[in-house]
Image 1: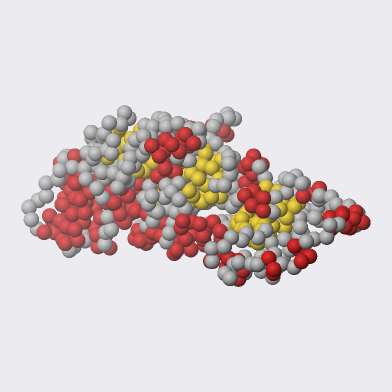
Image 2 (image 1 turned 180 degrees about the vertical axis):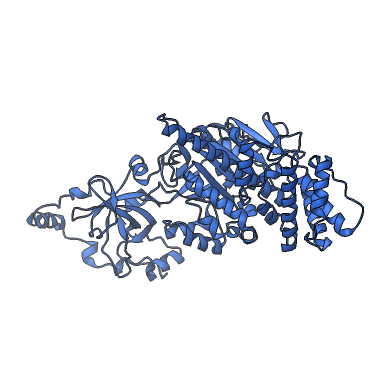
Amino acid sequence: MDDLTYSTEMVPTYLKSPADDLLARLDADIAAAGGPLDPDPDMEGAIGATMFDLASSEDGSVTVLLPRQNLDAAPSQALTRIASRDGRRYLGTVTKGPFAEPDSIRGDSHMLITVATRGGIYLPPYHGRVQVSLLGEEMPDGSLRPPLLRPLPNSPVRVLDDDEAARILGTEGDIRLGRAANYARLDVRVPSDRKDIFPRHTAILGTTGGGKSTTVANLVKEAQATGMAVILLDVEGEYAFLHEPTEDQRMVTALAERDRRPDGVDNVTLYHLVDHESANEDHPRRQAFSLQFARLSPYAVMEILDMTDAQQERFLRAYDIAKIILRRVGIFPRPGNADQERLALEVDEFERGYPRITLALLRDIVGACLAHLDGGAEYVPQARELQSTEAKEILKAQTHKSDLPKFPVSWRTLGGKLARLARLRVFDQAKARPLTYADMLQPGAVSVIDLSDSGATDISNIVIADLLRGVQEAQDEAYKTYEDVKRGGHLPGPPVRTLIVIEEAHEFLSDERIDKMPVLFQQVARIAKRGRKRWLGLVFVTQLPQHLPRQVFGLVNSYILHKITDPGVVSTLQRTVSGIDEALWNRLPGLAPGQAIVSFPHMTIPLLVAMDPTPAKLRLVD
């Protein structure tokens, strides 16, 4: 006889032939006990009830048991209300489960294992179990406070509908990010008009292929539609076609599922460096720009070019000679111009450079110093600032001083680094004007800075440093005007809400670079701190968050986390990003493309979100 075959002779006689009056006797017993038990009115509409606490129970978390038919009623992240038998009400979210467990035996019992492994069919009665993390005790006015007690056992548990869940989870706003996973129609949105959201800065992190670019493109379109000004630093040229609707069939299908259509971003201007190609030469609003060397802090230039101490000493000496020449020949400040005199005295060279200094002027000064130390022929300057006889005399006098730093090799190396910058042909070019930041800071303006053909990380970093400082100055000026007008009794609107998206942020603000470029990082930190009051928000986007220093994470208040597989990075983020449940952290390495864990200050808890597809066109980059 097979192990799973049973004979009828093994069944007791009273089970094979029950007494004829068995049912009548049962009915009589029920009637004698007071009749059938009435359903508990408190359990009406409930999906399950809380379980007794065990030795393994944890603070802030309760176990909920579900009847079999309600197993699918409490998916992961579902928001629940627990009506405790003592009259208190609690809100919680499903963080583990639902799990299926047999009613009367253990799920790992020998009998169940034997049946499953021998090909038999045996499905005992079973129920469901979920773990609910308590968000707080719900007060009569709808507010939440930290739970002082726990819900009593056998308290009914109900799942909130999408509308009430959206209100309690704080997922309302005018910028839509996506849809909460396991919800039929719970949109996750972010308000653009709160200073504690975007002006407190955001990080979009994840490995390649996780969906960061799609998230960025959709964020840009949504932000633009609310009237925000968006500046996107694009180092790969991925966003050069944002003004066009997407042609990616996967995106088109995904958009249709959400009742949306392909659509380009409005009011996009594509900027690229002069004498460098753009990723989209046919863009209808393409504009070349040059850099003004005078806008760059000399200390930031020294850091970006990785100058040694000896080279820094010579660079600063050349910089001082340039200021002397500009002043004495009347280029800056102009004689009798009080505003320029004041500006010359107030320039903070840790923030920006001295007005009217050009790269060509500095190269000539370094060349003249080297020629003097080498004892060769008299140097013939090429910069237009040095063409007058007076300027040449001043240059000769300054470069022939006895205290001029010696060792020509350091001057020669410095000249080589400046020549390398000059060969990029992006500084002080007459055929392309510098960026006009006031034009960028207009409501609904989208400015894509195409750095795909910059050819070097150094030049990209110089552009980013110059742009951040320029935008900050323009926003500071707008905020000052706003304050002045407001004091005059008028009611103007605040400065334009502005979002600066820095793609591949690890190349600009890597841990290694921060150690070598403290001045540059301090500029970013000042922008970040001032931006919180001036509607200026930064968005750091990177596939290598492990290269970002802790100081950058200290500037960030909101996170969109796509798939991250590096355990060390996940561990670091766990210590940095508060409020994310352990179950969500465990899911982070296995997120599908387009999924992300979203954490913003206005949200009650972080959520797993199916991010919206972008209706705008992305350029595919290998």
